[in-house]
Image (cartoon, rainbow, N blue to C red; front, top):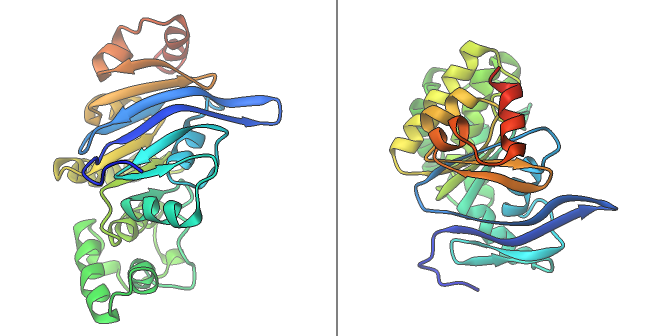
Length: 250
């Protein structure tokens, strides 16, 4: 186990395969506390798998991942995975809200059931968070009554209710139209300004340029390029990165 004072997210030589296909090929990277890192690259390059390994939702075959003083390895125990998930919330493309709960109830559920908060305290905190993401007036709406952008903002509020040190965002705007994407990205910019660590798989090249401190370009299971947005997006060194960027920025 690492020191509890180490709040970095560090991946060391992570390898993950499905059968004969290698999804992550000896990946190493460190994300500093408060850093916003955009992970871009072609479909099938390992981006979402990398996030799921950090959160313990996917196992890996070799290497180790240190998250805020807790270490994940190929044989990690459920208790260690649980602690990692308390530190880093994960938000998905398809929202994963409980359809039979209101927005408020979705945000309250985990703090009460997992952290043991009183319902009154959890409700007060949930209302604060829904207001923070611009949905205070939608607290009693069910997911079916909300737009895609509103659902995603509820999902962000739900993740924040666990008071994480950071968020793992897996293509959370890819199913939204441009106006709704802007709503969600504005919330993420606010969280970045507050110092929350954000690790984002995204196809939004404009947002990566605008908001990220660093961009990782993952292709064919490897980090093909890493650096500032300007360096990676405008002056990549690797031929693989150049090929990918040519297709998305043409």
